[in-house]
Amino acid sequence: MKNIFDVLKHHYGYDTFRPGQQEVIEAILKGEDVLAVMPTGGGKSVCYQIPAIVMDGMTLVVSPLISLMKDQVDGLQTMGVKAAYINSQLSNMEQRQIMEEAKRGELDLLYVSPERLGNSQFMSYASNWNIDVIAVDEAHCVSQWGHDFRPSYQRIPELMAVLPSRPIFAAFTATATKIVQDDMINQLQMQTPFKHIASFDRPNLYFSVVKPKNKANKLLNIIDKKRIKYYLL
Image (cartoon, rainbow, N blue to C red; front, top):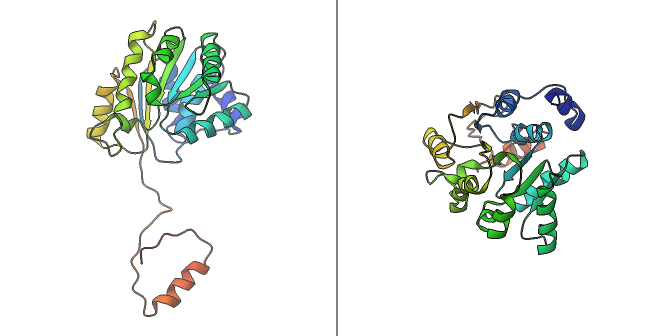
């Protein structure tokens, strides 16, 4: 098995992991289900991409956005990782070619939308794939308690009925209350998952309320400063 630090350096160009990444990766490699709640920009995708590169089988990534799928697959292919996606922008022939590649074990990662799991042809192909991990991105969408519930996410456990063996489930989100976390575990039928709940404290971000005498001049002074700010006027 490849060393995860070697993979990090070779494919991503980093020597060290961000907080929480190593623990999540090691849990997946141990065969544990994982629930990771990490802030936007916290490096969630690396947590399932590195195990996909290291492990023998394929990682199936359930992702809600076509644009995100394409961006991630393009980036992975640039790094030399065997990755592909299936979505409505591909022709039927292109979709079949990718599913055949997955059947032959030629892919490390395959990205699909949750709606794809309702396609009988896809599920028939999936029954012949060696899937080590099902990584669920934006996993809060599976919960009716979440702010962005999508019923198609609840099809994910149906994969277990067609696969020859149960894969590892790894669920990732940037936003989930305790109620949503528990519901995610229940809906995805996760088995005593390893949990990584990151802190959302951002010391570089702060709020302040200012009541200037001259509102227009104060606003111009703030805009002139070379820092990113958000304003409520």
